[in-house]
Length: 187
Length: 289
Ligand code: SF4
Ligand code: SF4
Image (cartoon, rainbow over all chains, first blue to last red; front, side, top):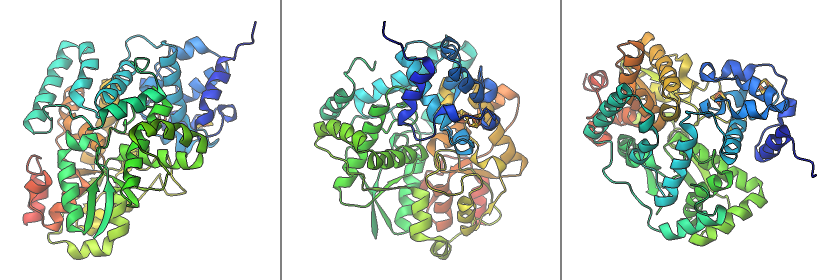
């Protein structure tokens, strides 16, 4: 049997490309958690998630909403005394969970990220109404009414274009994407 | 007129048309020629990185490579998220030849090649550095006297830190607002996150983040919140009614792009700045007073 890479080493390897220090240097000081504007909506604080990764608590980490609740604001990153790029680590965890197809039930984030990429691969541009199809079905009736009011307001203000735009050299663009990820795998 | 390779980004074609209008008007008035690069694509905002890192870099690199072909030296983005993506992609590719090779292999399909030679800048930085406060002051036709503005920087324009610059308490936005005759407020939340795409993926969390920003601005007596990013602008403006519903508040504060405020002070007609659509009685009063 080949020795399997531990979960913490997998994450550390995936973070190799990021530009901060390895999470093994984390002091567990909690500055990141104290800074985070979204912490009260997270199952585990950023500090706790790092602790859990170091303890190899893979299932618990995959079941946590923490990184899908990260807004990528980089406030933790600029304040970490150990020079860890925590915001980038949150991206790594998102990628890991999409890769493993394992995330907490009910989250919109994974579907949204994949729908966004699919949309851009199809047209080269992003367009809000297409994205709406990924989250509107999860809304309650009251939320839908609110959303309709907001959307109508946007149309009335002339802010919403009627049709999505496309780039001109779309064929080249799609071949370019294919050299990175075989199309179909991203979707 | 100095020329720049201009990358508007997707929001400026849709939700942030008013930013596009005002950015171009103000640039023209200040003698900055923004030349939109051809056939650019979406830079991915914050949504590609969760899926595939190399793809995220490649999509941004395509725009940079198109800009490099123009022979211009500066790549200018008015959107903070586009700016951040372009800035770091450019920097990483320059530092990491292996990454650059992978990206260039893909770019071949569109006959492009990135060398990492563009100077990536946010529009506000170009205005501050290449025009300068003194010159701006000279050109102001209608100082926005008495207009109390909360300068909201947001995240991506500041963070991650690029060099050793001040990211906790920057002052350049305040300086710019003073230069156009307005009264910038001390706004402690100015670098706090607006929730960004959580407005879609975690509405509850984002509305709370927006609420905190609105509350402080209103408590401090702001007439308007000024922004440098379409994502912040939409979250703070469009979702105010949802914040009110969620928290039982009655917040109603205009949110404007810094270019709209500058444009008004420069004497550009408000409909050419996309201002006519916004509820900004106080800002108009300041101009017409
Ligand atoms: S701020 Fe840095 S060192 Fe402190 S707990 Fe967070 S990651 Fe660890
Ligand atoms: S980047 Fe994410 S984890 Fe870090 S402070 Fe911002 S929201 Fe919190």
